[in-house]
Length: 109
Image (cartoon, rainbow, N blue to C red; front, top):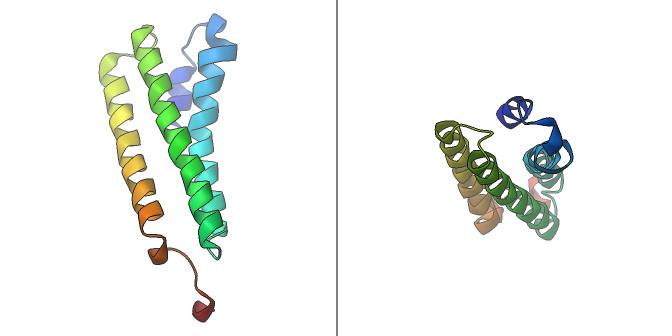
């Protein structure tokens, strides 16, 4: 939601590029994690959706860099959000690397 809030201040000419892109990928991180959670009965599907979330989180970081370099976001706020996404990425990668912690086995029903 922080990404959405600060993107409201982007100039109108960025509406169909930077604004839409950063909102889309930041939201998609969450939706892919939700889909992965619902697919945790199937390890491959679980990992695939988490991989999608990882990619979207990394893309969000790139758009944050653009926002700072274009002067639309203060550097300090950009660094703060970038670091938050580093934490999100660490969590996602940890889940991908250790799916056995999360996947529901047939014996767990």
